[in-house]
Image: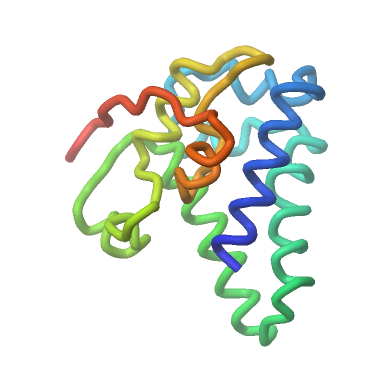
Length: 147
């Protein structure tokens, strides 16, 4: 579900930048994201980036209800982590960010830092850089604060 949900998130995030920027630009007013800034999001934006990808993955995978709850919880927690701007080995371990193809916090930080505009933005995927690599939108990945 994580891989499929992130693919849907990639597509939705890219659509928001390229066609529905007026609904996504509010979130990009914050060029240095924080955990709290995760909540600075328009309702349509939240639906396209969170609701549809999460439910789409669930409909296609048909998980057990407890598995779905765990996935939804992990998805929200990882979204907050991706906006916190900090990396730590323990967080990378808990969120499996050490696995091949996984996008670190720096990937989404770079999206906010270098893609605060509608067209030709980079780093749309949040959990995997695979989609950005496959569709030519993988951009600069800067460093994050370490604690």
